[in-house]
Length: 198
Image (cartoon, rainbow, N blue to C red; front, side):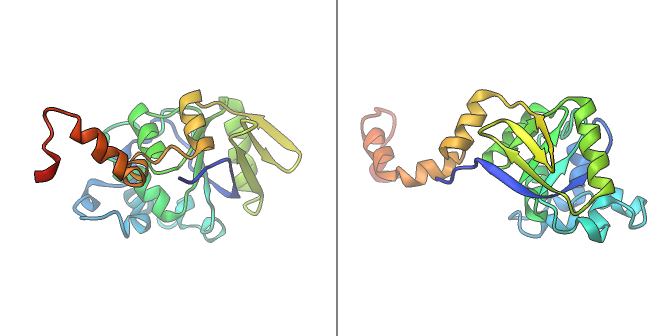
């Protein structure tokens, strides 16, 4: 399992409350069999409407790995394509005021930590990112802070999710695969599982 303790890199800010999963990845891109290629379509409709002025279109943010958002990010339908699209684009961590619960869980499942900061501090980070796109942020899950230059902002995350990142146990599927023999042993003890025919 892979531990996630610190994520460092340039950041990209998307402002606005209640940005839902349909805006993050429009329904027209949900016909894919795998998540490959979703990254290029993240915020597709918003990007069309802003004629190339959306942050995800601007050249100074193309190698950003930390997304800074506002309140109730990822609300709406529970589509796991939304965090997958962000991750395929290159996002490795998200800093925001709050997240929809299912979106947060889907992010944890693919190893993308979502930390919470106060509205004032999120705004401070968004302004900083817009004024200095080259700034490097560090999301530190050990100290529970976001650091940039001389600024250190306290952040929050539920302790269960935090520990799963620090211990490298966030990948449930990976844990099952790496413990396949133990799974088989357990399955043979269950009266309702015929492992031989599985």
